[in-house]
Length: 320
Image (tube, rainbow, N blue to C red; front, side):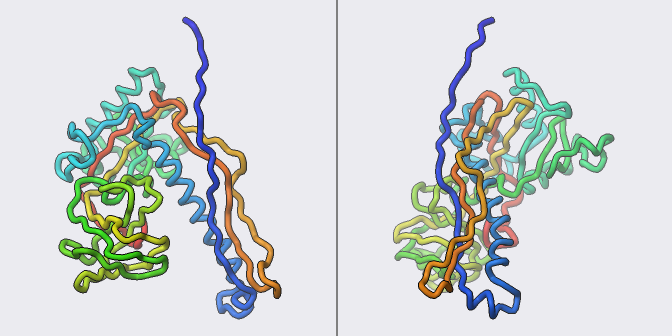
């Protein structure tokens, strides 16, 4: 048998975030120096950003060759909450498909990364084994919650694309929405219900999880065509952008012992403290910065099944 190599290209980009603070805030804050608080909050924000970047690379439709939709559906828009749930049969088939492609399991089985809503649908199945019933607790993965048919399930809150499936309600913004505003004005507020999660986005008729303009918010109240949000917007949105309430999509990734996702790094993410920017040395910024990129390096080592779930409720917080 001949042995050959292959080359994979990863796109390297700049990523980061900075928050401005002042000497006055540091000296007068009841909670202590604000710059220290910012540093503490940057860690989770950086981890969330890296997690979403890795997720988006894994589910990239241009690279994910082995990708199907639960219930035999043709696409995301066809997924339904009743007929497209994650099931033991899907896990069994995914493990078989990886095995056929000669992807060996880890010593403890194949691994599936799933959302808590999908675990909700699996727990009542007679084949489900809770992680606390394993005979060898030392082999448990971080976030692992159970297994079915030898497939180990790792829970991840970001394994979800809000409103990316069948559209329930959709309208557009009537005007620009600047960052830090707690309401939007839409062409029609029919169907926008307080407590529901909506996505404001630009590039696609349905959110796809990778559009940089996407922002997921929870409706607080509705007055005419003005929709009040539970939290303020964090980025600018333009007139004509979509406002969508739809079925959540849960892209389940099945993997084995062969690495599917790669990461190219020029500069590892790091926290940076900028020098004061004004003449009196009062204003400064604290942030994180990195130069890196994710990408699929072995598409045959990855099996993706996109599902819906019987539960489609908004998160406790107004972000995903």
